[in-house]
Image 1 (spheres, rainbow, N blue to C red):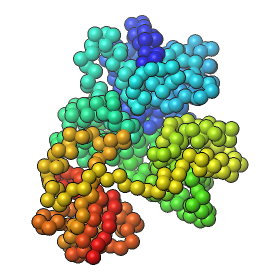
Image 2 (cartoon, one colour; image 1 turned 120 degrees about the horizontal axis):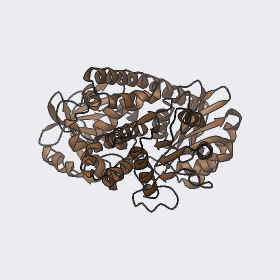
Image 3 (cartoon, rainbow, N blue to C red; image 1 turned 180 degrees about the vertical axis):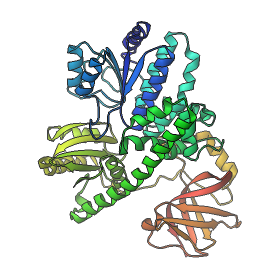
Image 4 (cartoon, helix red, strand yellow; image 1 turned 90 degrees about the vertical axis):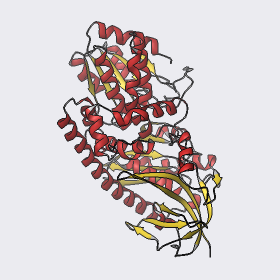
Length: 512
């Protein structure tokens, strides 16, 4: 990877000479897991290392000059970033002028005009001139490559696999594509997770309901463990995550894991509120969906920690790119999410003169904008999206992998699918369709949103099917003995020590 030789040389020099090293991590799950990985690695190599994870609300995203000034005043001569810094040109110019060496590890896209910042070394497979073959590494994955290179240089490569558990969590939770190296990282990390001995990781696994000793999968990382890690930075100080994974005392680890669990419950409540308010704002605006290719939704005082999650859900519902912006006075901070067919970063680049700052990649981005720029930003982004997207792109469609008879459904098929894991972004679960299933009993409506069914084929073997948010998706609730065609993902659902097959419904066609 471009920059690796210089980064390793400088770090080993710092370790040998007992120079203190500051790790500067982002506040999301990718950045905090990467910070924990580097902190453990540096200390294992004998370094004197500290860390700084900025507060989302008081410091904001990325490397800030004030933080570098503080680091220099505390005697640091070397800073290593995690999951940030590729666009931090001004702070890094200050660092260079003041004798502070900075090594950037990041995976976000660099500024097209300015390129990489003036760091001692930049590790980023997406930077210009880097021939590294895998461009899909998460931020924690790039940090891991640095760790691997350091231990290999010291002749201690045998310890490297021990870091994969943490790297797997960050990779899945950051929704990196599970192809190439990421697929190998996650598969290897998952295989060892149930036997984790790190007190913090062990406590988090237990509190997330994954501690029954069974094998874990990518769903556990993305929907049970990852959200609890992410909640720290969304709701409060993300440094609690690094404290958790650095804890050596089991009681302290348990306390910190419970703290993250509490923050996650708060996050879910705030997310529901902001999603509902944003949808209400969009629907009351009178926007014609036929002419809307990119939704820009703004409001005052919305919780900035969850606007990205709201943008993701709205993009999924509208099947369009979505930007959700929260204003505090005249300054707005926004999070954007996209659909497969639209490169979000390219769209924001066409609006760069309207934005105070922005960064991200093809499917997710963050930005800052002035209130008076919103109308032109909305118009221009919509215009760019309209030039890129077709009506077909904006129409939700399911890609069925295979038609499966009810007789074929069973644990054997479920076991055969395990060979395709880990499932996630870039490698979704196979989508099947089974026709003519009969409804066996009265459907249940769960929490006024979800539809739960018991169905069977002609051989009368019952299957449990659940359609998350199915109540709002279907116009008519099926009735007993009605025939259905179901599109679904097959999952072996583990609960209370039992394993049951479950059809996770994605669409339904009712018959007579």
